Amino acid sequence: MEKKNLDWGNLGFSYHVTDKRYVSMFQNGAWDDGALISDDKIVMSEDAGVLHYSQSVFEGLKAYETEDGHIVCFRPDLNASRMADSARRLEMPAFPEDRFVKAVIETVKANAAWVPPYGSGATLYVRPLMFGISPVIGVAPAEDYMFRIFTTPVGPYFKGGQKPIVVRISDFDRAAPRGTGHIKAGLNYAMSLHAIVDAHKKGFAENIYLDPATRTKIEETGGANILFVDRDGKLVIPTSDSILPSITRRSLHYVAEHYLGMTVVEREVTLQEVDDGNFVECGLCGTAAVISPIGKIYDHGKEILLESGMEDIGPVMKKLYDTLTGIQMGRIEAPEGWIQKIM
Image 1 (cartoon, helix red, strand yellow):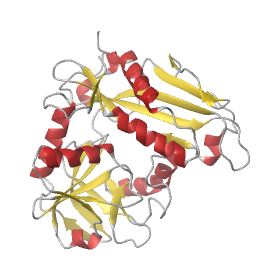
Image 2 (cartoon, rainbow, N blue to C red; image 1 turned 60 degrees about the horizontal axis):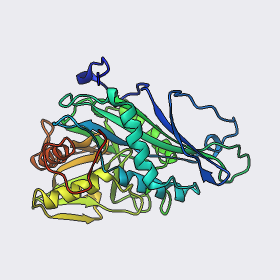
Image 3 (cartoon, rainbow, N blue to C red; image 1 turned 90 degrees about the horizontal axis):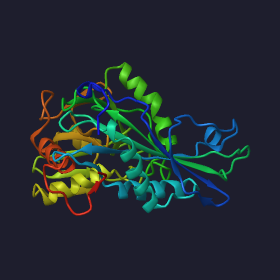
């Protein structure tokens, strides 16, 4: 198989139209058989439910070329499960989880020439999405839905790679108490767009959102969960009912305990603890970046500098990053069921 002629080492995190995408329709109460198609365009009614009432959920995962030349995906079964949970919360029919994994395999295999070569630093981003496509003028769930998977080769999410980033405490709320912050719905990300555009204009890479009820506890950023390392070397993971359950975070929890022998604590984390200097390292984690170290947090004129600094990723985050990416790329033996071989 001949790879596409791309400058793999200099790819940004942007969209490229690849060869095939998978499409399945839910109509008359059932999902059809689905198929791979070449057309990257979607035709729908101006009254489609997604356009008016934001009935849309999505996922993100990656395909990699491993050290031994295989193409694999990382834990797609968890993406299938999370998407089903998201769909049910928005009164959408869950796409069958076994079919989700099979569709990912088919789509990646059909776009194998777009999977970046091992060692390039790039990956094939896989985007499953589902939305209400039938006309809906009154406030109600749609009757028909489209499930779709497309792919695009991408480079690092943050341009600096492992260079520590600067973030700020946001004045906005990411999610409402007892709302939809715990699912991967498009509407959550729409709410964060103004905040992230404003943050970028002011020189910050991301926003840290506090809990919407008391605005005293750390939750997550617009697109990633947050991790801390305390002064005793423990990995501390903030918890909240409105945090999205990140597959990368869940995997890093396991890696920290079972590969690195660390103590992991999942609990509420207050902004005051961060301000008091209780943590020596901090990072964002998610599919796109794996781990992006945070070197500095701005809180309304107050500068909180992590001891790990602004020059390089901290030693614990570095070990976590190297171990998880080593598992993903086939350099380190993976726990059973973590790696889905494509070809």
